[in-house]
Amino acid sequence: KQDIAQGRTGNDTLHAGTHCGKKCCERDSWGACMFAPMAEAVDSSTDVFVEKHYYSAFTDTSLHALLNERKTSSVLFCGVTANMCVQASATDACLLGFKVAVPWDCTWASSSTAKSKARRALRRQGALIVRDGTSICLGDDPNVNRRMVS
Picture 1 (tube, one colour):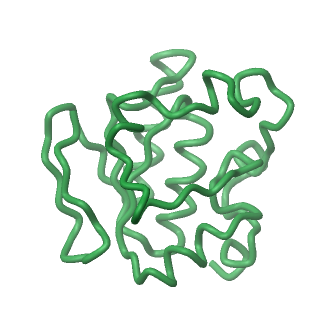
Picture 2 (cartoon, helix red, strand yellow; picture 1 turned 45 degrees about the vertical axis):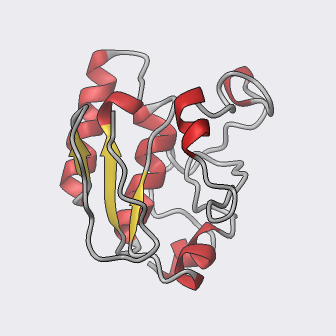
Picture 3 (cartoon, one colour; picture 1 turned 60 degrees about the horizontal axis):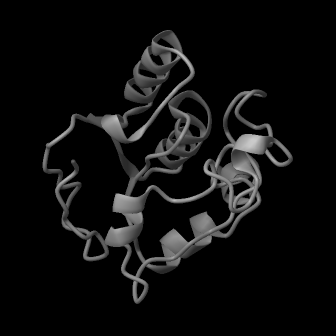
């Protein structure tokens, strides 16, 4: 847990890797841009963006410190690759003691097998896998905006 808090991932070698320089994640590319319906839900007065350079959003970023500073206990992850960035970030969040939810229809993977393996691994870590159209509440955290996941 301390290694993650200091910016080193708790994940295996694959998930501790970096995606910089790969076309799917170049700044301003489709892989790095926010999905339009998610972008519309952003509240710029409260939402914070952290640029990451590794699969896990906790590796060498200020994310853990920001979440602690805001006394956040629950996080939600979605993204382009369920079995890489989403899994790595959600796993680290679980290891750091956060309540974690992943709206599964807001993820993608290169194969259904890879996505299924990621789902099983995240469940083992304690992440809540949320189905489309399900309303979620991860607790009484005042920093959580309760929105319908669809």
